[in-house]
Image (cartoon, rainbow, N blue to C red):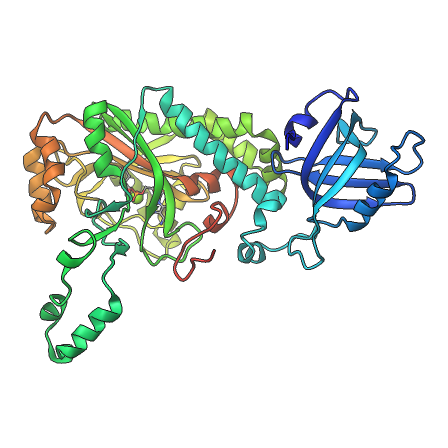
Length: 482
Ligand code: 4AD
Ligand code: MG
C-alpha cells in the first residue's frame, strides 16, 4: 500500500493531482450537501480536510459507496481515501482533498475514549495506549523523537562515538543503593527454605546467607543499571569522546512529577576534558537542543505555547540567547541562606540541595539556567575529582526554571590512590571496582562527563507538567501498566 504522509501532502502544491490519504478521523461534519472529514495520520500536527460535495456534477459514479462509507465514519475511525488535491477555500489550510474513493478500514464505536472534548491528563494516562492519538501526546512524542535525533546529531557533529553500555550490571554507579535487583532465584522457594531452617529465631546475617547468589543466573548479585557512566568511561579512555543514550532504572520511592523508575539518560564522556570544558559543552548542548525544537518543530511548539504552557517559546528563545549563570555550591548556599524563611528545609553548607532550593536559585535569584559546581564531597558520588581544598569535588548540576536539576555531571577522579582511598572511605569494596581502577592504573587521563535526563529535557521543552506524560509508558512506584 503506497501512501503519502499527510505532512508531505499539506506542503505540496494544489495541482489537482490524485493523492491517497490514510489516517484516523478527528472529526466529521455532514451538512446537507457537503461532508467534511478531518484526518490525521500522526506525521504532523495538522490534519488534512477531505471534502465531498454531493452537488458536484463531476462526482464519480461511485457516490453510493462514498455515502455508505460516510455513514460508517465517526471520530477515531481509520480510513483510506483518494481524491484530487486542490486549493482550499477554507481559512487556515492551503489545500484539501476532493474525495473520489473512500474506504473505512476500521470503524470506531462510540465508547472510544478519545473524543474531541478535552480529557484530563489523568484520564489519558489511564488510556495511555490511545493517548498518542490526541493533539497533545502526538506533539509530545514527535518532540521526543526530534530531541533524540538532535542529540545524536549534536554529538556526531563533534567527533563523539555512540556507544552502548549494559543495562544489566553488578556495580552501583551512584552508590545510592537504588537499584532494581535482577534474579532468577525463586522468592517462594527461598521463603520455604527459610521456614524449614527455622528462620524466625535466626539472626539476620545467618538468614541472609540462605540466599546463595552463586546459584543465581549471573552467579552473583546483579541489577538494572542506574547509569552507564562507569562503562562509558572505559570507552572514553579509548575512543576519546563517546556518549551513551538509553534507559536507566532507579528504585527510589519518589512519587513526584519529575521522577520515573525507568527513564532515559544521555551520558557523554570525554577524555582530556576538565570541569570547565564539561560545563561549556553542557551549555552548548542544551542551547542546541532548544534551538532545534524552536526551528525544526515549529508547529508542535506553537501548540505547546498556546495550549500547554503559554510563553514557553519565549522562555526557550531567552535561554538560547543568554549565558548560563555559573556559581559555586558555596556561593549558592550563601545566597539561599539569605532567604532561609522561604524554605521548608533550611539550607546550610553541607546540605544536599532540595528541589525547592534548586528552583529558588534558578527562578528567583538568577532567573536563568544555573550551573552549580564544586559540591561537598559527602553529598556526591565516589568517582568525582577531589578539589585541592579536600572538602569539595568537581561536580556540576545544571538547574532550570520550573524543574530544578536537568543535568548532573563531574570531572572524574583520575588519581588511582585518591580514588582507591575514596572507595575505602565509603565502605565500597575495591574488588568490585578493580576494572574501574585499572583505567587509573594504565595510562590515566583527566576526563569528564555528564548525564542529561531525557524526560526532564522534554518537560522543559514542551512545558508539560508531569514526567509521566512525556514517555509513552511511565514506570513509577506502583505503576507498571501496559
Ligand atoms: O545526577 P544523576 O544521578 O547523575 C548520574 O547518574 C551520573 N552518573 C551522570 C553522569 O555523569 N554520566 O542523573 C543525571 C540526570 C539528572 O540530572 C536528571 O535529569 C535525571 O538524570 N534523573 C532522572 N530523571 C527522571 N527520573 C529520575 N528518577 C531521575 N534521576 C535522575
Ligand atoms: Mg544528580
